[in-house]
Length: 81
Image (cartoon, rainbow, N blue to C red):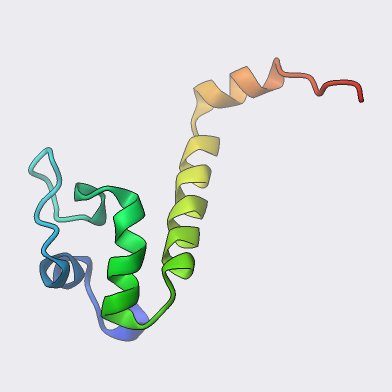
């Protein structure tokens, strides 16, 4: 968003998403994530698929960084096909 001259606060305010449920910094997670893509598409002109892809990549990376998940994944072995 920075290359577009946008801050998270400005985007959240423009989309009317409000603050996060815990009262923290404003964020796009305050609304159902599936609704963020079309809203961001309307606001920026970039496709909803682009924005949802970014969110999916971020979510997946956050999960992979979780040490507990790493331990669980080591115990999973692929099916023999």
